[in-house]
Amino acid sequence: MKRSDFLKTLGLGALGTLFASGRALGAQRSGSMPKGNFKGARAPISIGTWPFAEHTTRASLEAMQKGANALDAVELGVKICEADPRERSVGLGGRPDRDGRVTLDACIMDHLGNIGAVAACEQVVHVSSLARAVMEHTPHVMLVGDGATQFAREQGFPMQNLLVPDSEAEWKKWLEKSEYKAIPNIENHDTIGQLTLDAQGRLAGCCTTSGMAFKMHGRVGDSPIIGAGLYVDGEVGAATATGQGEEVIRTVGSFRVVAAMKSGKSPQQACEDAVHEIHKFFVRRGKPWADTQIGFIAMDVQGYVGGYALRPGFSYAVASVDGVQVLRAESLFDA
Image (cartoon, rainbow, N blue to C red; front, side, top):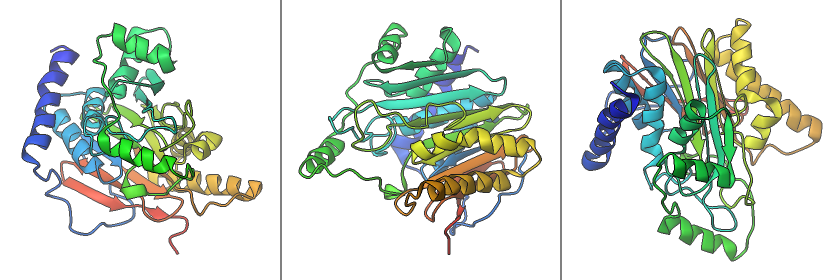
């Protein structure tokens, strides 16, 4: 079956099921949110940042159980979040920049090292799919701004106003004072980074976001940058990041996590090391960390996963044959 037909069959069905019935996809999750490392699970398995990934990882898992490969499954999963106007930091409904323009960033990577990314893209809901189109249909790895939007038109992506009424109202309220500051863990929503491991042992990852609310027009964070917001090594594991993108870029965070796993550390240890390194940079520069959040999740080729954050409040979802759980990530400043 062609990729487009497969995604149409699985993707639209998943979206319809979610939005039509509103059923709890995470019915098998525990009532509490355990912390610490999730034990290795039999593939397929999918993990994603923040509680909304409970739905997206479950959809990816179900797709892989029906025969989808890891790359198709991760794209299908994050598209659910991109299409939901209630998720205010991803895709449709994302918060605008200080000029009132919603610009989206995304990247995607597979187990072979194929990569694609778009940044500062407007009018396209599914920038995850657009990033994949860059990967598969261009000689480049990243398109930005008007060039990304132009490419989307050429590829037949529908153009749509991404600024929903609620986001517009928030922006107009913000304009009254125009005070800009990052808000950690805002509504427990942020970038969605998702990783998948299929039954054949293939890894894939995708990271998609609308970036910081009320950012300067043209600002790009870590999410579309391979090695910062996302990195996949098909022989080792994969990692993705969320939170203050500038700090993740500074340390090439996701690559750092995968490199640590390659040296023999567990996904949990690797995530912890990356956060500690980011904190060292704060100390060296004499910068406060209190208003900043950074989180990482990682998965190795055995299906072991980990997650860790700079400060409390970060959680991530894990979907496997054993069910779906939302795990509370430990943090450097839990105390």
